[in-house]
Length: 147
Image (cartoon, rainbow, N blue to C red):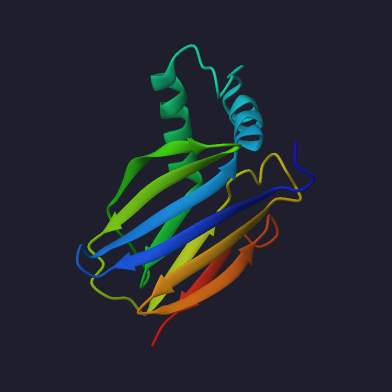
């Protein structure tokens, strides 16, 4: 168990593929507790009876709680998958068709319905510049602007 509730969302623009690549790191115990409460299930995330069912719950939850708009527009996105690393899970999502951007808005409400002290640290790298912001249940949306 860990004494605080935090996740990290890393966003990077890939010029060659014209995609925004997102990596979200969450603690496994927080994810398990949240999935069980939200979907009214009893899932053992490390030892599921059905890995496809677990993976579909993770995918549905992450896509429902992580929304990005670029210059005020929704872009096509794809859930690429996830991997477990020690006590955490890394989730990967890509948004396509982003040549350049002036503004990126992110709403990330992962775990907010379960943990009122949840924080999400967002780091975005675009054109060699890295910017960071913190999201909370009181402020789940931030806007990053670029020249």
